[in-house]
Length: 110
Image (cartoon, rainbow, N blue to C red; front, side, top):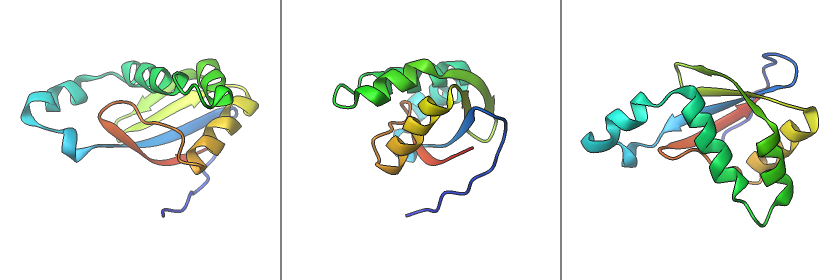
C-alpha cells in the first residue's frame, strides 16, 4: 500500500494523482485517453462517483467540488469546501473513490 504524502497546493484544494491504466491502452483507444482535456476527465470523475448510491455523502460531495486544473503528469486539481474535500479523502482511504474511465487513482493529497 502506498503512503500518502501531504503537499499543500492552495487552500480548499485537493490533488488527485492519476495513472493511465495500461490494460485499457489499446491502439484503438490510446488517442481517446490522451486527447481528453482535464475538464473532461474531471466530468468523468464526477459522474462515476456521483452514482455511488450506497455512499450519499460521497455522491453529494463530489457534486459540490469544482475543476481547478489539470497538470500534464496526470494530476487532477479540484477545489471545494473543506468538508467536501474531507469526504473525498475518506473515500480514497476506504478505496471507495473511483477514477475516471481509463485511469486509476495513485494518490490523493492537498
